[in-house]
Image (cartoon, rainbow over all chains, first blue to last red; front, side, top):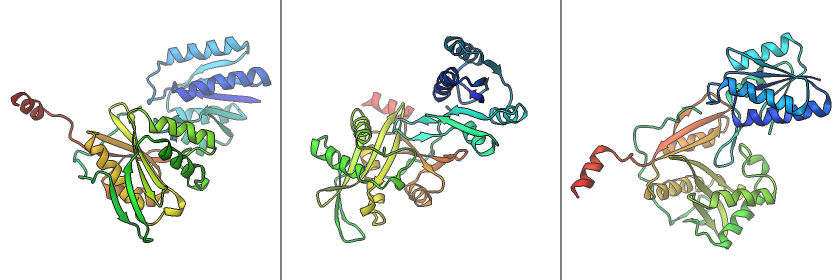
Length: 122
Length: 190
């Protein structure tokens, strides 16, 4: 399957990256990792690209890690449609100190606007 | 994460527990601080294990007994502040403040048997009274935006919407003034 995994540096996006790479290695997915600029994340984009490269190399798969500029939600949907991805994978939300799950604005936008299947990783 | 915003004005004052009242169904209810006992913990576990899954919000209370117990372990310990509404020896409702850096996150649950009887309003006021006594400065919560009953309860208490850009509304309340220059001066004088 042709899978686009969008990450912006939040903890849940890093979890989504790890699980998607793992799954791609097991299932033979054609994976692209899109590193977006998440204004709510303090993680540096270069560090995140490096982290994604390491994850891909570690799993021994051949996946593209791509830096994506501009509005994260809009860009992820645009790439998914233009390049005929079958699935978009994103982080499945942040857990508050109380244990409440909240879904970030990027995931919410993609979920409501994408034409492809969207997977949120918990 | 973006900085959370809070109202400038302090809300309340709110009454501290214990608080006794008769609910709209004529039941005697008492709101008390959580006392740390095994009995109280068990009463809460029982309330949450029986909790109607359709009233869950954003993943809590959790759906299985073992996960309810893990969750209670987290929110009944440490610097968390908890109050329980008791009715006839049962936990009818529970409200909690969980530390989050300088602020506290609030949640409240009333068991289905005891809903729509005015217990939630008393319970949240009791929790905020407890928090006010303990010197809590700011409180925030998230609520699903379609949950109008909850949103209007929080607004009535004094919560103001601080972020409306997601599925969930984020609301904030100020319980105590931050220690200002005046306080420092008067402390020095004393």
